[in-house]
Length: 576
Image 1 (tube, rainbow, N blue to C red):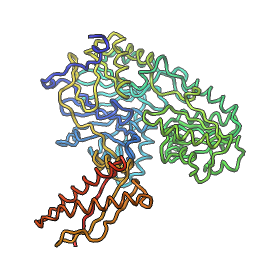
Image 2: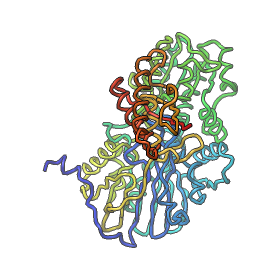
Image 3: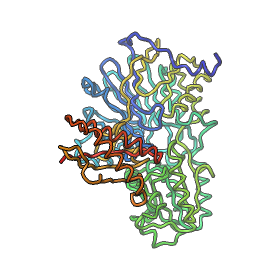
Image 4: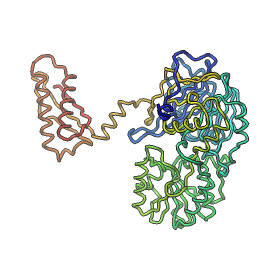
C-alpha cells in the first residue's frame, strides 16, 4: 500500500461503547462543506454547543433561502435540556445565521458572544419579532466561564472580522482548543495583531484535542496581511476615473473600514447598498469598530447622484452573485437610484465560494457589458482570506502540540490537506481524526476513535417561513420543473360509458409553446384518450388512481420519445 492510500484511511472504529470518562464530539455541520457550522461537545449528560451557522444554497436548490443544521439529535428524548451553553466564535453568518431558526427549538439556552457578534445577533433577531427574547451574554478576550463540567476561556484570534475568538475548553476528559476561523496577521487593519504569547501559554497547558480551521489548508505559504490588501486597494483609489463600487461581505468590517479610510484620503463620500450591509455598518459604528469623519457617510445612497463621480465610493453586498443582493441589482439595472456608468470601477473584494463560480461570472459579464472596469482577486490581491494557509496551520499545530488533531470548517479536500499537515508536523495517522458531519467522535486521554453509529446531520432547508418542510422530494420536483417544466392534461370522462368527452385540455409551462406544437398536442390528446378508454373498456369497477398513474407514465414516455425532455406530467381526470 502506498503512502497516499495509507493516509486516506480514516481512524479505526470500535464497536464497544465509549467510556463514561470520555468526551463525545458531534459535528452537526461545517465538516465537508463551507458554512453551517455547529458542533456539540457532550460529557455524560451535559452538552456544550459551539456556533449555530447556516450555509447558502447551491445553484441546484431553487427557491431555498438557507440551509441550517439538523438538530434532531438534540430534540430526541429532549436532550436539549442538557445544554449548558452556546459559544459563538465570531459574527459571520456561517457561524451565527441559524440562531433564529434553531435556538428556541432547543430550549433557548444562554448564548455567549463577543460584542460585535452579539450586536449582529441581536439586530438580526429583530426580524423575528414573533420569537421569545434570546439570552445573549457578552464575552471578551480572556473571559472565563464555568458551564456545567466545562471550564471555558476565550482568546482573541485574527480573522477578517473584529472580535473573533478561539476557545480553550477544559473538560474532565482533557483540554480542547477550538481555533475558530483564524489567520496569523502581524499587520492587521482595525484590530490588534496575533497574540502569539497567549497562544503559547495555552499550548503549555496541554492540548488533548485541537480542532482546527481547514479552509485555507490547500493554499501554500502564508495568508496575505490586511496591510497588503490596503496598499493594493489604494492603487485602485489613486487611478479610478469615476465612482468606485466595492462588493464584499457585509460582515467584513475590516474591509469596510479600509474603504472608508481610503475614501476619506481621496476625498470621496461613501454610500451603502444592501440591507445587511447597512445594518452591520450601523452596529459597528455604534460599538466603535467603524470610524469615519463627519460627513463621509451618506445617509442614502441616492445622494451619490448629487456629487461628482470621482468623489463617490459605494459599498454593496453581492460579491457571490446573490440574487437579491445589491451588486446583482446594479448588474441587472434594477436598482432604483444607482445606474452603472462607463468609467465606474467595480471591485470584487472576496474570493468565490465553491459553487458560486458561474453566477459570479455572469455578474462580471453584465457589468463589463455596461463598460465598467472590473477588478477581482485573481487580477490583483484585493482580498485577503480570513483563513490560515499551510505555514500558519503548521505553526498552530506546533504551538498547541496536541495529542489528537481534528480538522474542521471546510470542504473534505481542505480537511484532508489539513490532516496531512498534522502528519507532516509529526503526528501519527491514528491520532488525526478526519470525520464527517453526524459522526460521533469519542476522545479521552488514552484513545480517540469514531463510533459506528451516526446522528442525523441532513440538510434542513429554509424557504420563506418554512423550516424543513422542503425535503429531497420537493427539491427534486423543483429541479424537474426548472429543467423541463410542467405538462398538465385535463380529461373529462363519462362515468357510465368510460368515454372521454370532448378533447382533453392541455396546460404547458416551461415545456413547449402550445401554439407552435400543434402536431405534438394532437398526438398527445390521442394517446391520452386511447390510454383511458382502454382501461375503462372492461366495464368493471374503475380504479381511477391506477388510470391516472398509467396516463402519467405513458405520457411521460411518449413526450420523452418525441422531445428528449421529461416535464412533470400531471394528469387530471374528471368524472361526470
